[in-house]
Image (tube, rainbow, N blue to C red; front, side, top):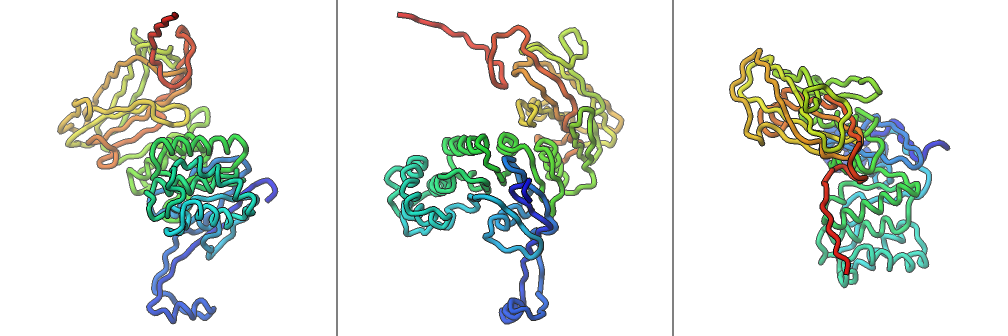
Length: 408
């Protein structure tokens, strides 16, 4: 256990219902008493987290994400397995963290900080910092029942992060905050990461997981089905959402070690993807701002009532830089017969920053792949952008400025 900060071994949590309360009591007393139903919210989940890692926990609603965090923090008891943890743990699992509605924000902070093990002297020192971070003004001394959900989140996050923990656990609660406070919260999380805090975060926000985490764990129906790099896991999760079933999801390793996920029902597929310069020559390296042509060839294997091509340009972390489809450009094809081959030519200037990028493609019937997903293909094409002749800039977009100076 010395090499890792948190170890979860064969963890399981079951919820039982009984036909009568006396049966439940007898079961608690250790007497053999069959329950009416059993629902395993989590079962046979094992993983280890090293010091300083940032792990994203992803999965659909009901997958067991929140249950896992409750077991890790000790707010719920496991029926199977064990959790071994070293160091100070700070968690935001539910909005308000058990705040008393008739107590003020300040009083709730004192109570919550005390439960976290802080002394009176530490709490007195922390309170001004929590109040300043929450930025709710006079409401800090008003009853919490007068707070909006966003205000509760501000105070709860301020308490949980007043002292840098060894492990910070955050559930979806941050989603209720306003945009300004979300940025402020994520900035604090990033600072903790740089200082060595281990992060465990549950979020449906792909970009948040990709920005904050270097590893992801995918839960489905209470089971751990994938543990690996963020891009690989999020691609698989995206395919799983589209298909609901695992049979049509395929995963393969590309040259260089990256993992490609392909999903779909198979009525149509992408056969060729290529990036070309203005002369029509295939290219893998592109200059910032260079005009390019993305060529995609699709084949229809079974007749489809409507065919839409979509594509997304992603950075090395898998975050979307730009995406669109022929539904939005009003170029969808109707009643496409089996055997039809469609060649798409997409021209645009490569106005993005230097770095490595990938292109994902989708063949669908509408503007989304969640209805009829004929094929979704991640990492369909990889390419590199270099800044060969532009003034130095940072970021993922080339937005050439015109700067005027007036000196007086």
